[in-house]
Length: 493
Image 1 (spheres, rainbow, N blue to C red):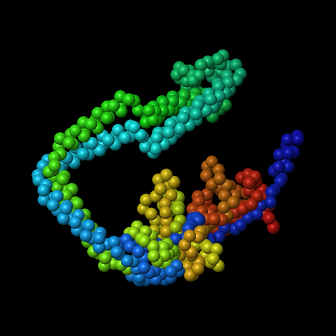
Image 2 (cartoon, one colour):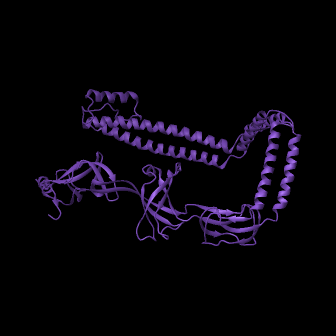
Image 3 (spheres, one colour):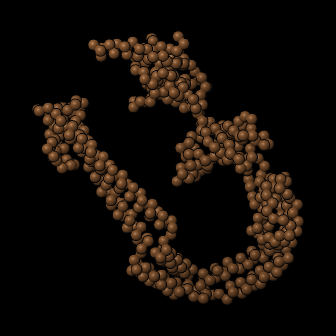
């Protein structure tokens, strides 16, 4: 009587729920990421020749155009360098004139490649690279972790198998499953598994009854236990293999080293036998020396004519790194020049990058701007980072002069899809189940659970493409404990 009264009370209880009436409206899906503002172009300006800075006409913050003079240098050392280059050219041409025909260059190149490969292999034996050692250690750690996981899986599956056997043995007389109940080795032998399978077949494959489910549980847990044992054995072999590879890297045998040294000597002897003072390779080297000397002369003559350091493109001087009187070379940084304007660089997950294309609409939010800036996706890197699974994306934005400053951070919202007439429900109203998403609606005073198909997922709402219609009254709050067909009260009514 008490249980009946409780059931009647539960049936009479009508929870209060909040609802919305479904109507077509706009929805949009977007990706939200942090980005960093960058200049569209940046360059470090250097001198075309070595010398002493005599004047610097550009200061930090100056706007310059391509070709504008930034600084000037003296070139006192260039005449001497030019004379040396001319002497080098005469010597190179004389050397080339003395060379004659010899062995074929392909033979010499082949012997040299064999020697290089043999020396590289010996160097690898004597001192393996940090990368190779790190990879070998990582492989060993991965194998050891896999073995540990498999050992845990063995214990777990063993306990589940013993539990399933005990459950199968805990039956009234006459309902026994052909499972050895007075102690048995596990995993169960094939004969026992076949007997259990035959028992199920004798019951027309019944797997839904309590007896059938117990029998199926024994078969499944026995198979899982066998699989865990096999996985552990494979993991042990992987650990042994990875350990052997790491040991071979760190501790090469003396015989292997001696054998490789012998290979290096054989390759060196072979190269010396093929080479002679007048080979094609020597002629090619002489030609290259002549070409380098001629190029050096041309460079020196051009440097003498170019004592002015100019801007390579329109931009703003961001840094001035030296002062007049400094001695500089062609590798000395003098200025940092950045182009006007700004772009936003964003690092996207590769799965998100696959959903956008150049030209996609973007909103950029910065601390300086009073409202989001509009922009577009400029470029998507054709190659991503395979380890981090990320892709670099560049975005342009319509920016006031101070809204985007290179080096600052922004928030970007990249539009991936949108509709103006979608049927959408609040995200909290969607109930995930093993059979798929569901939504509760109110019909005739009762909650009804409907299977739905989802479309565009926005920040606060999700499109429903199948399962609901305009005018449906969707429960958005109070549905967490509802049952299908339960009577409900709508808040405010």
